[in-house]
Length: 180
Image (cartoon, rainbow, N blue to C red; front, side):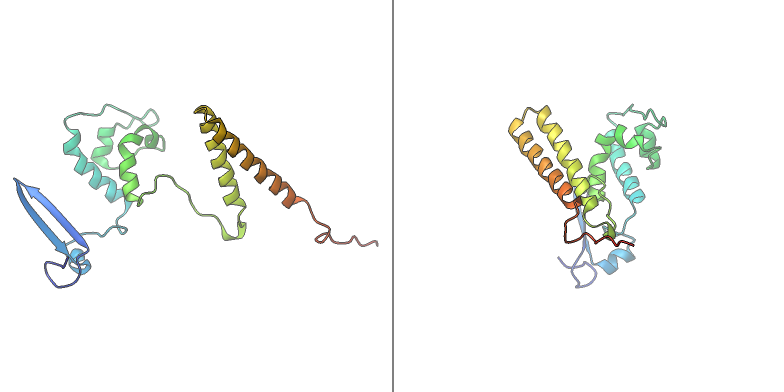
């Protein structure tokens, strides 16, 4: 698609339907900025949350949510008005309502993974893998998937054995003690 105002490729495609009349707008990056449209990836999370809340206000009006956060007392309707959560516990309380929004805002990411310092090497990645395998093992046992649980257990044991072998100093790396 081409921009409606010039011949450049359009990066913003907006379709609005009002009173049964469909209106399409296609804009290039330059004309989108001039129109005040913030491109994806450049929009702060607070603005995304506010826009989501505003867009959901009409949909949620039919079924008001009485859910409130026990940590700070914030209700979901208050969150919809302000676009801000009151505390960290709000993320768990309103998880069902927020999960789709956060996933879209983070380009499909649903869990914070963070970054590892480069100098730490693979030790942090290894610890995270072990934690993930232990969680999977717990889920497999709870779901009575014993073959899967055995595979995960064996993988954890092999990783544990390898870490013990890595910690043992080899004869080639030991320094001779100086007598003196």
